[in-house]
Length: 339
Image (cartoon, rainbow, N blue to C red; front, side, top):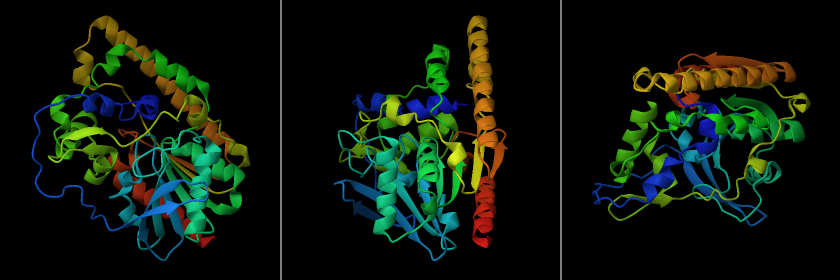
């Protein structure tokens, strides 16, 4: 099972590897990228000359805004977000640098990214909302909660930690190379969005929406994946890793965290030499310690929070544990509405 550090910093890095291969093209019948997930797709132009992709499921209830993790677009929620409409006013935002949103040369810090979110809210006449953010979006959740409390009804952290802790970056550089050796993609995986989706199921056990894969990739006339639609040069560790000011957050908070029990499957582990197995086990112990530290900070520094951890889960908790995540979020959202 992949660690949160590897997924944050190297999420979908296999995309760059796939983009350089040139296999024989495979014909993909029909428009597989037609989005039929029940939302409108908007491009919201902000005053700072930034265009932001917004998915709008509508709904008449309290606003709920989904924020994707690093490497993803709003379409990663294409199937999950439908559980909350029409009871809630549901939208999802693709952050700058990814998918159909603008890719400026600079302006990727917490202030800029959070400013885009507030700009979208203003353009859609949403005064305040509950935010559900995955992975890197925890940085945006924490910034909004600490600095724009009047716009925040509640915060839902979907395996999203305080990435301002430099220990996470240090840990990333210490992961044994044997772990990453299993994260390989072949030329076959770039033949179509179906092949890539199948590779993701095989490697991680997760079924990503086809529309999310389509949003991440430029494709040729035969459907072969060519190059990423994202521009990541603006995202440095400096503007990705900002320490959360948890003490300043007054809104109610729900934290849903994965177990991250192991880097590798049993078969993968058994294929390694004894020495390599020891290195991987030592690294996993460090990972478990860092996760425990992170959750302890979350529990002790936030005033109004509930924390849940799922055993045998994945960093993408809303995909690996959909039913449990929906139930917890619904209970949390209803408690906010009743206050």
